[in-house]
Image (tube, rainbow, N blue to C red):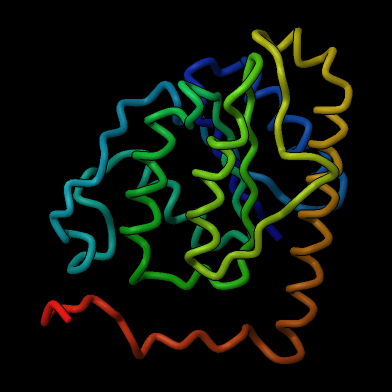
Length: 209
C-alpha cells in the first residue's frame, strides 16, 4: 500500500514540510509506503487545454506532473500540502493539481483512492485553501480523509510548528485515519471491487436550453 505525498511549499523544510512529515511518519508506522515529491520550488506552469493528454495519455509538459502521475496511478492515496497565500493555496500547487487530474482523467481511475489536504498558515486563511484542494478529491470519487480538526498547522517557521501541539496531533490522527481507510477499502475491494461509476451523461447544454 502506498501514498503519494506532495509538498507544495517552496520552502523545503518549512511549515508545510513539517506537517507532512508528521503524517508521513504515522503512515509508515502503520505499514503504508510513502513517496514524497517537493514541487513548490519547481517551475510548474498551468494547463493550456491543448488536449495533448487525450491523445497521448500524459501532459504535453514533461515535468513533475508526469512523474507524479505514474506514482499516483499505483498509489492508494495522496496527501497534498500547501502554505496559505492570500487565503488560498500556493499557485504552483493548483497548477500542478489541475494538470495532474486532467491529464490522468483518461488513463486511470481514481475511484476509492483516498485524498487529504494539509495546510499551513501563519494565522488565517487556511480553511479556504483547504477547501480548494479537497475539491479535486470530491469530483473524482476519492474519499476525503478527515482528522480531529481541520488538517492544518500554524506558524511562520518549522520551529513554530513544533509548538503547535494540537496541529501536530491533528496530523498524526490524519495519518492513522488515512491508513485505516486505505486498509478498509483494500479489504472491501477483495469482496466486491470498487463501486460502479456511471459515465453516461455529460451535461453541457449545447443547444442553450
